[in-house]
Image (tube, rainbow, N blue to C red):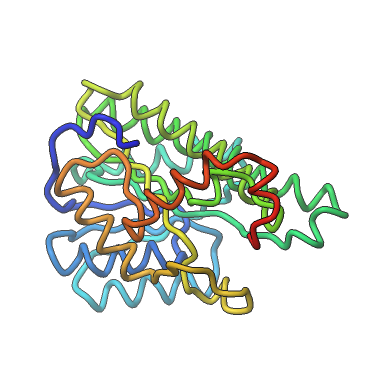
Length: 257
């Protein structure tokens, strides 16, 4: 169900991406730069891939900076994110929280440490970064926090319940944070894609209603424009997941999911 959306917003002039090498995030950045965005910060672990992403966006006409960010190092988040917000070149119009790991369900079930790492990255790290960014947006009385959730969080599946449970926690957190920010000038938009064709999912079995990073980027821009609180990609997944969410467990267990 869609929450109260509030007013729509124009494409951001400035954008902070947490998870600066994410294919979905970079597709979104390209789309927004083509419209209005002129300043981009890519936050992620220092790497050749992060530098290449920054160079690509500079080639599109944006002013781009990179920021060392580790989702698992929550103790560092306040200093790292505070530096971006305090840079003094105007407000950050939009934060896109796009980091996360899929893991390997079969392996992670027998390796609790690996399972915990997924939970810490996808949920704990996102809670830390999300709260800090929300506070900064609220203080400047302006801005959108866009959080990449997943339909996997709608109902735990046998095939990916470790990843799905981490996204379920993130989704609930994002919705509550959006309610907390209501009326402050800052807002949260939750994005729930289905299976997205990326390098990270290339070896996985493709699922029905699969989508692409570019389609998610298009949906994010449209959601911002209309002031949506929740965006499904593709939109038909909203109906599909509503049905699956209410299936009895005895029936759900027999589905090939």
